Length: 210
Ligand SMILES: Nc1ncnc2c1ncn2[C@@H]1O[C@H](COP(=O)(O)OP(=O)(O)OP(=O)(O)O)[C@@H](O)[C@H]1O
Ligand SMILES: [Mg+2]
Image 1 (cartoon, protein in one colour):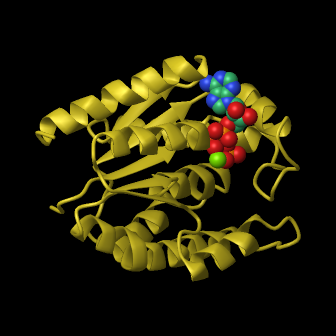
Image 2 (image 1 turned 60 degrees about the horizontal axis):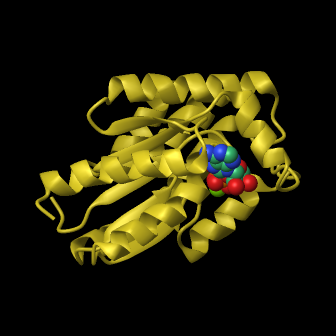
């Protein structure tokens, strides 16, 4: 148990994670909490370099290389950012974490879940988020939202069946860890999603007597 809380945001591309992360961070600051906002892959100098390799359309790699690089970046992220901040009593809010590896590398790339679970145990030990917000949207809607924004990265250029497997793997993970993973219907307008984020955080704060 740490003094701070660890919250992760998950969902397929375009689900609204970054939009809600900005809102959540402001909400926690209003509650006088120190907030460390971070992301995966990335969050450290080395992790951001790995992120650039992982997202670059020209870096073809074996699916297991991709998974290992994700967990390598995560090992660094936990050691340099997440655990020190939690020890200091800060709240850590991360745009993606390990559920994304089970969704993208497990579901999308079809890597054996047992291999990912071994890496999870190796890299995290007992560390798990206190709460994960899974923003669920149909893949067509998520892809429509991102395609309006920017040129696709190495993941975003994948085909629809890839994203269908990613979403299904996220949903399976949410079924497996119902206490930790809260599913939010992210088809709703931004303000309705924000209201659900706020009420979920209120419940977490009430449990911690904040
Ligand atoms: N609930 C919503 N309704 C309609 N549009 C939304 C909603 N949430 C976010 N958007 C818009 O959809 C686009 C993608 O949102 P955002 O960047 O927050 O998604 P993301 O999950 O972070 O995507 P990525 O995985 O690509 O980083 C943005 O243009 C954002 O303004
Ligand atoms: Mg984003």
